[in-house]
Length: 144
Image 1: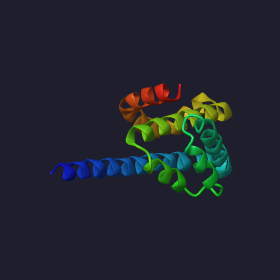
Image 2: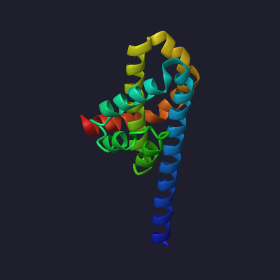
Image 3: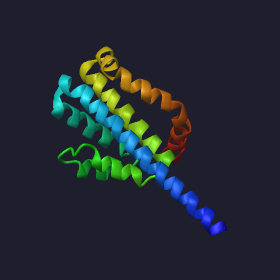
Image 4: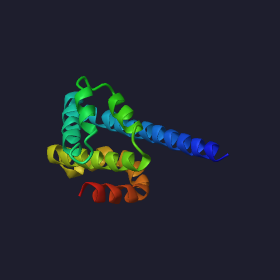
């Protein structure tokens, strides 16, 4: 009976990580759709790749995503990499990646336009940010 509980617990964690990775990538796809008309596909790719490069200092496994996404394959490499992490690490890494992306975007098109373009997406992300607080603290402690 103890083995069964351990198996269920592991399965739940894996399913949760897989679902969380899919949700994270869905958000990235929404950002892609919202920004492509303004800064173009190449602009999105450039900012995303730079954000990956900045973020992989704290999450070294993201370096492989940057290398694998040479053709910017609709975030499938990111999803695969995220799904291999724990939920806490997924949330912390995705938050850090979003922060890097947003800083780069603001430097390119300004804060006001960035906020307007990403308002609906950020509202969803902000609702989840309360759940990310612990993951963010974990990441800061682990990589400080």
